[in-house]
Length: 93
Ligand SMILES: [Zn+2]
Image (cartoon, rainbow, N blue to C red):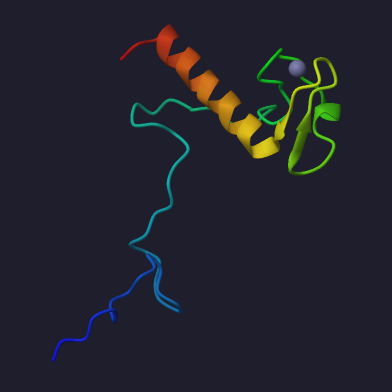
């Protein structure tokens, strides 16, 4: 009888070799840099104000200029998305 669920679930088995697994790369297929995390969680997606003070805690974003409030990860994701879209519009494939 065949046992289900006995296959390896993780790309890196416990104690196994990771030589076949390569982590996702930051660069896109075209080799371009998709941008690092610089200021992505400090820049307000509503007004563009960028300040260290916009990030009072690790998970909180509170804009000192306009009062926009959100989770820091959401703000970071929005800023990365916008930077990518702007880059894509500037140089369409
Ligand atoms: Zn703001």
